[in-house]
Amino acid sequence: QVQLVEYGGGKVQAGDSLRLSCVATGRSFSTYVMAWFRQPPGKEREFVAAANWRRFDTYYADFVKGRSTISRDNADNTVVYLQMNHLKPEDTGDYYCAADFATWPPTSRWTEYDYWGQGTQVTISS
Image (cartoon, rainbow, N blue to C red; front, side):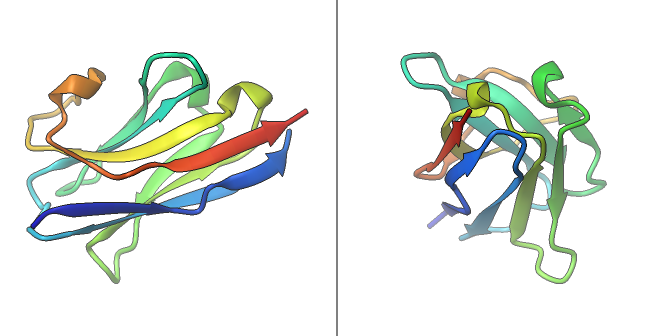
């Protein structure tokens, strides 16, 4: 049974940093694209960042480039992180980890992803 579980959300102030974690279990994700999406209040789910597990090429949405880094725990091949720096109030939303058995570059369409976590809430106050 495939399971993605996110950790690390919370309430912080603008300018602060957060690191989200996604623990992926239930199968080998070595051929998968791992991604982070977010859903701001009242808005559509949107792509944030992705990486392919094998080479860990990375890809970012323009609004997080230079502020966020997707990475993995090399000692534990089941954990993917999203480090977010210089957070802004507009970064507020529910953040989701997703996995897609796909080629590279990744799709930004959330409907294309096969597996999802339950989400973790991130709130940035000004």
